[in-house]
Length: 162
Image (cartoon, rainbow, N blue to C red; front, side, top):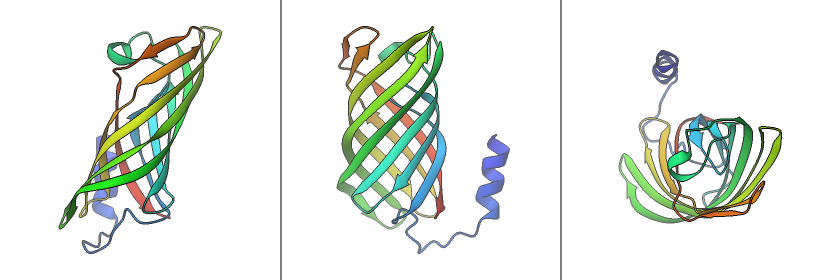
């Protein structure tokens, strides 16, 4: 997998002046969400709005995110890019905030959860990758009601211009 990512990175032409985080860019990689851990995708709708989704296995939240993987899940988030901490040269460090929904099926039970999302996004302009760390307080609605105030999610994605 790492070889494939490196091969793609070397094979694609990169314009260091280009802003690959522009409208209609699609990022694909690995990540965690409200209920799904696995594949991650992010579509940049505009400079201020994006949609991200995760498809993969269902785990717990917080410290149990990667234990007890017992089903398949999907989660999606609507994100608003609110602040540029560093925006210039080769590095962009941005803050995004939004909300998300996660669904899934685990051990013959349905899973439904909602979450708030506040993320710190690191974008390196010369290479179309992002690395994101998100604070994600979640409310599990089914099969049991549970509030998880401390939960983190992560994403690493490669971007294609669409």
